[in-house]
Length: 112
Length: 113
Image (cartoon, rainbow over the protein chains, first blue to last red):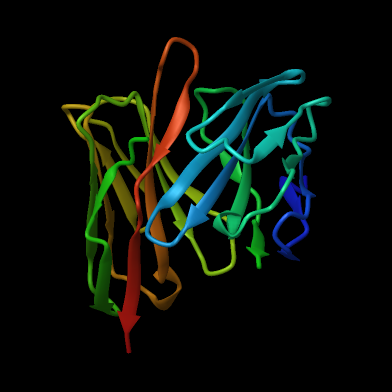
């Protein structure tokens, strides 16, 4: 199993550009989530999904959209990038909402 | 949003020393998790705790689920260079079906040569 994979690993965007961060898992996990990590802030939940077709907002959802059309994939979309979205983004998955989460390697995003 | 209080924020130790860190909250959690993050990588799960008072080991790592369910502790014995990294605690509590993981702000461990 590859576990949780994320692409790209690095990305630089200009303010106002849009892009999609990809996340996939091959563990047949129901629960997937997106976090952002900023210095001194730990990990903050952006959006999560408890199964295909179901998504919900986390702690910091503004400026981000998600969809979950399959169990395996959970892309994160930035519709109009802002410098405040410069961060490292991690995708995670787990068997269910009460089980431990496994993280991908992260995407480092810089918005200029 | 709430984040867990994790201390210390950073530690500078010599190889071979033991390490202790803790995580506290004003709220009760049903599950405590401890993760380690290496530079440029995602967090990796070290230990999961599911019951108040539980003490679980993973090699030189030992973690405990506090009896009040509001705290957790991680100890590393006889530290080695590969222990360097950031350690995060995370708590999970049921919220009418919307269980969400809450993270601490991390403890950065540095080993002084």
